[in-house]
Length: 191
Length: 101
Image: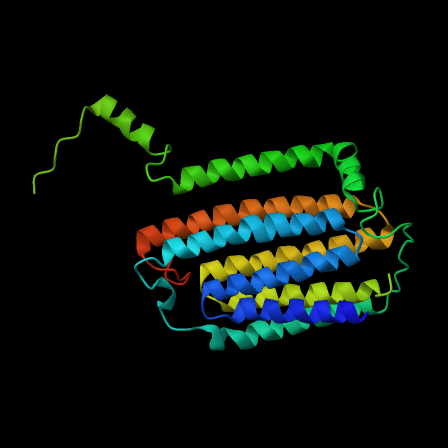
């Protein structure tokens, strides 16, 4: 119980830091702390494979992506100080909304007694619930379609990012070539 | 499982609403995207908690799917941020009003 309280405090503190930090880089650090605490929480819930996935995919891939974009955007300019800070004005309605939602969740969960299933074996033992073998068996037998959909989602994301971010996007380039093949090369505009 | 499952759900709710506050109150799209990651993670925490409660690893599969979608969302969202920055030199969602009706 004491471990859970410590983890919960670490997660809430780091989440608050992420949301209130002045610069996005600080937010990334807060988010990293949050992800690591969450991975440990997954371990206490018999989800060891997901704990590793959390570290590898979130802390390893997504956060690095954020850091790269921050480095890309803040080179040369100071884009993040643009405009007035609207946090104080928006904070009260947002906090009010959050408290109301939290009260709703507490009311919904508070009265229910959940009896957790007994799981033989400890976290990390081979073949126990949540281990790699258990997760892989479930993923590649009963849940093969979700796994294939995962691959499709990632492929769509990659194609989308290439189309969006490419300097000379393949969406636009062929169109120009086609137009010029119909109307001939465009005349230079006299200025 | 010495900690009652309700405690995990409450923790997830707290994290979720911290993330909601971040999305609403912040104007920096990068921090908004990070707040969205907080939302994904709190949903995952509930999924994993109830997978443990029922002893059924379908919740783990669902959390795996959510992680994938979060990765795709982060990649697309950051690409959009980069494009908007290239066009407007601003990183403030209030300045981006080209689609305003």
